[in-house]
Length: 197
Picture 1 (cartoon, rainbow, N blue to C red):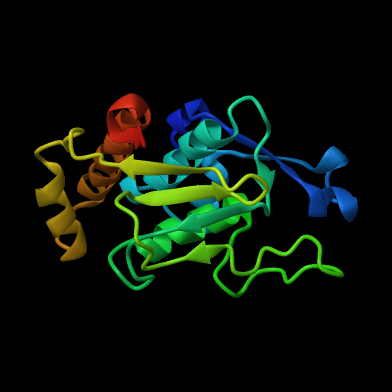
Picture 2 (tube, rainbow, N blue to C red; picture 1 turned 135 degrees about the horizontal axis):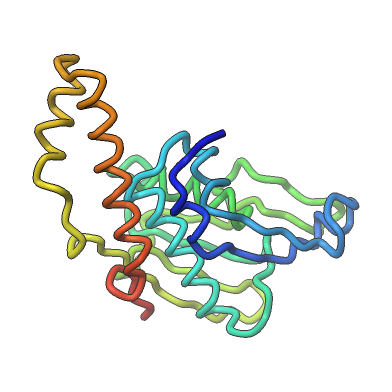
């Protein structure tokens, strides 16, 4: 599998998953996610998929500080409806990393390890997403805004030509390169695009 090299430069997310440990899936329940992991799940790389990954990474660092985040013990809230804009795409990425779901997740074993009902939409928050620890009820709000990282001026024209099937193979390839160039620029400016409240 070949993909842009910058994917490998994006910080990995490390968590501890007690269910994984209990069932012997990973040693000590330690799990690591990379950006390429969520790209494979989403089927693409874009500012939204990257933003969901970065919000999770930075939000969990702020929430857990020097501790490993506990997969399956993190509640996630959004202000939007699940059908609004890209809320569903973001939620899918965050589910993949944290295990949190609305009502489709693992219901637990004898009252332990449940991931069900850990994600909520239409919450009264003023941020992109809120992460809450179930053990302490501490929360952090995360705001993602990549608008300061502009796209190449040729990208719009090449996108239109590619969608209308009038682009050459070279133009289609150039569109993809320019698209990922913006994603890379966002990944290198985390402090500009992510704010913790």
